[in-house]
Image 1 (tube, rainbow, N blue to C red):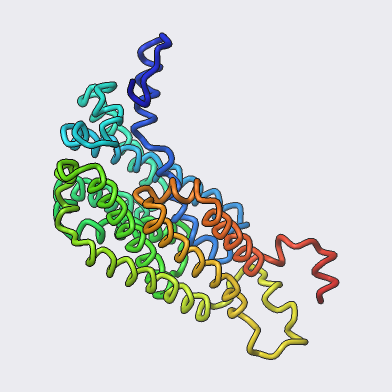
Image 2: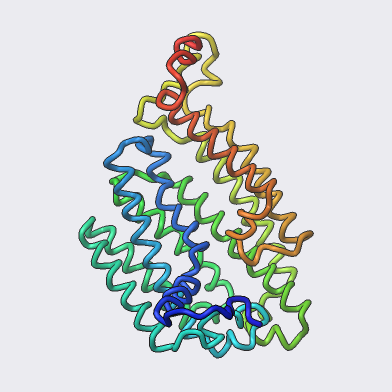
Length: 336
């Protein structure tokens, strides 16, 4: 019995919508949280107008990614049938007719771009660029070694820029390098894990993803180390050089009268660096020892040490940038 197969009966339209939702891969919507990154580091997360504007953009990108996944599964339905894991996707299983899935996918994309045009022309251009990149990736780019992972990284960068243009935020070069390095690290790790899984299933399974056969293991290992190093180093430089945010950064100056300049201003953000380094090392462990990593969002949700590091990092970022907004007044008065 297939993973999504049910014996209960009901209206066909209900099951159709359910399979459409499954094919939309809601878990992948986590990647669209990248739109919030400029909002957080700009220091305006608690600005209601900007916050809900980015939430609206996040919803639009969730619709866009759902549409692109539907189109991708229609394009890949024959290959997916021969894949040990992707063969359980609804379109490959025959739960949804390809033409119906295609109609929903195109409809989602048209609807999302129409919504994006109401927000900002630049946001709409970012959304259109993302759609175009995903379509080109599904049709051509993923068949070319190295270009496939660069396309994945470009998708993350477009999300970040989409979030930035919504609120007219400035993004520093080190921030962009951090996002690019992290996305390349995750993409290479994904390829490394996919190759391990398919080779373990037998040489014939590797034929279902021919691009993986062009990636020698030693090349994947070298690229993984290279982008792992680039990720934590770029983030370290970003935290060191990031100017203080504009939103009441009380916590950055709480000890201004007591501490030397070494520990003042933007350098407080560097307390988050150890958790980024640990997260990178933990993810390397997941790739090489646990033989996982083919689904970064699943790893994040299921690996407790990695999830804990991400949550602590998020907490510290908010304390450093928004301490004046989120710490109780009594604590702030006592510290000052």
